[in-house]
Length: 579
Ligand code: AMP
Image: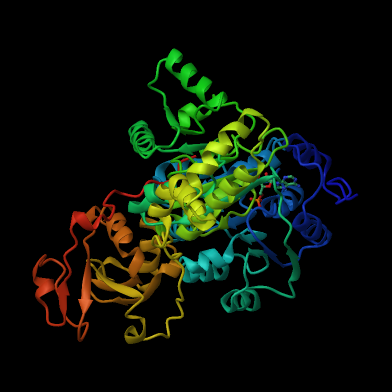
């Protein structure tokens, strides 16, 4: 069996890996580490999140860098602040037994001051998002002239987010002799171009096997309309009639609301949240343990005390604010060797968070479909028929009563009898779910091939008017970055971008437009509030003045589409995970 020691890593690194509890190298580690230690060379690693790729580049860096020197020798570039923080934390673990090692995380959305202070400590390794790193380089706050290794992590994701120019600049403006290690889940042509331009005969490694913690715990998510969460929850509960499950909400108020609505609809539920007194909590837990209720609606705070072994499902009515809590929540099922299912209800704009969770749990989450109404009826019927067929009839006295029943039912045909039983048993389910609408929303991914015309994309995209333009030093890439950084949208949700002097037109997927507008409206550009609205294109994209609030809407060719609250889009500033 391959061990970390047999890969040739220094003892203090093997010790760190053992302290982390890694027993053997994952596939990507086994394939990437030996060539990276053998000689300085470029590498392309095709690996998804959760495969252990952070250690695949982190451990060789820990082995190769000269930590007695106080200069930046390696820079790791990754797409998001969350990933940046995670790599930073992982590196701390890898370098635990190398006293002089220092890693600094540099990312946008946080103050420069704190990061500059960290840089004063002369780290050997910098983990950064492309935009902030470029900023620091431009301001001459970071000296990358001695960089020997440049790692691009989740390269495809960075390109998706519009960081192409930044990556090019970073690779072009750093030491020409550096080695580039590029990791990506997919290999679009643009990645091949980067590899061709900046790398020399790179070693190529591919790994598909993931590190999965709880093998018997399945992670799924449904993409739904935020306003339909409750309908989706009910359908999910009905789809699994034998569910013994937990439903998690973000707030106490929501927990109470959801539990009350479920109880009103006849579900055996109760609520658990931080404001219950200890005796109240004990009483709820007792009911749940004894299974007199089969669904418990809870907040994250309450989750930690739930130690019940045979929970079959954990449903995330919405995702937790703290990514950490996803693990706490889903860990309530698949315990004691049993299997379990975790299902998150997310909106299209929340898809980016799925990636963060996948990283955290080291496992892929399955995009599953909300069951169709007819499937629910079918499942319920099958469950009932099983119960009927297997019902034990051991009480002799039934023979006596059967005669009476037979006499009463003599005039009814078997078909009629079956229908009547079903009507009695499944009326509510059939009324609610038979021919019920599809509750799935489409995933927020679409083509961004740039070549498509507005005409052909008209059905898919909504055009947004944004009061930012060339005057704000934005080009197409900059605008895409601005949108990705200030909303939950992925680059793939954005279509054609038309940057004018004072404002821009940006096509975004229609179904995500409401969410994106709501999120961008909380954003600022150099302390100036960002204005965003839907512009309906009828003829051309000419003219306009960013300061004339209503005036721009009167321009020829555009009319403002009014959105009102009843259309239900979230206006709240997006909540980001914090570590
Ligand atoms: P990554 O793909 O680097 O985000 O890693 C995914 C998860 O796998 C993280 O939680 C790591 O701590 C964990 N991990 C990485 N390498 C190993 C290993 N060799 N054995 C067990 N777990 C690992």
